[in-house]
Image (cartoon, rainbow, N blue to C red):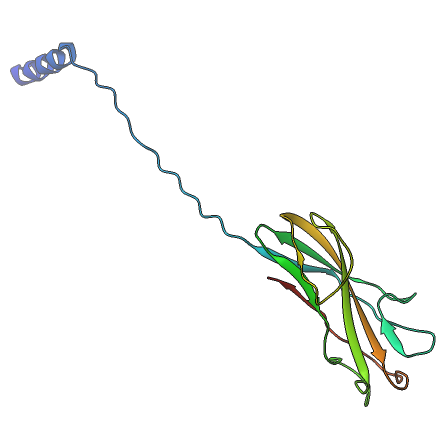
Length: 158
């Protein structure tokens, strides 16, 4: 071993052999969170309007009708309502004449509510609520003409 290597090895041994003070160390690990309130609406099933026997109503609550279904995921202080349309989105000529609309809903799951007029807001509980939405279109004069009809109920979470 040459002299330079001997010095380096000697220093290394001296460094390792030196008694050294051991100091405890601490550190803080930061954590943060941002919680936001959300209300998510998802259409599960579209509704189907059926005619009344006298052809004066198109209603999802009639025998061949189907309620629309909406799943609601809520984490905040929200209420739900269902706004009836003011007209059909599709109708034959004169189909919108003398028609009044009403929406209704029922809720199950985190929030429960019996049949409620759509314009009435119901406070939502935290969790998943299943909303059944119904629509009634009633002729105030005459009957519904033959043809295709479509309408949309606006479900609000606010």
